[in-house]
Amino acid sequence: MRVAVLLSGRGTNLRAIIDAAQRDLPVDLVLALADRQCAGVELARQAGVPAAVVARSEFGSRSDFERALGAHLVAVRPDLIVLAGFMRVLSGEFVARWEGRMINIHPSLLPKYPGLDTHARALAAGDTEHGATVHFVTAELDAGPAIAQARMPVLPGDTAESLAERLLPLEHRLLVDAIRTLARTGAS
Image (cartoon, rainbow, N blue to C red; front, side):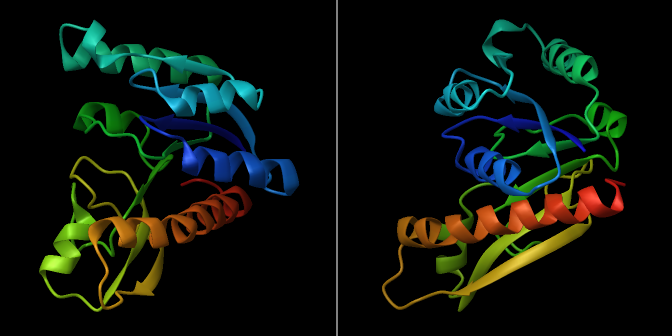
């Protein structure tokens, strides 16, 4: 399965995918595409994964930015696009083009807490459980069909930072397992 990864930051989920692909994940990482220069781009390059930056700040409109993203994706013909810490909301038009072939990892037990600040929101609500969800991307933010979830307890004394830190390894395993399942069964 040809996989393109969209990211915006450190690239920890990308690292998990790269590591799994080097072991036994049946994917060909064809592109790491970022919306800004970030550590994940350098990580991809060091691992031999083709990488590019399409900086939103360089485009006058969202549609121009998305056209440039799309051109990079079309060029590599991915079977699956993985949003792994990609911090841009994509338009319905862009999402429709890749329907059934684009997934996202989100740090909450969706449908709880779509969007940002999920760890703080779970703590503020008094949740006793937190987790992550891999889901298909749809035009509605973090509302696509769930593929898989990972759960963990909220511990006494947890902070948003400690929840995020404890959740990250679960996110990595969850994302790799979801990609593995889609590689076996087909992305859509």
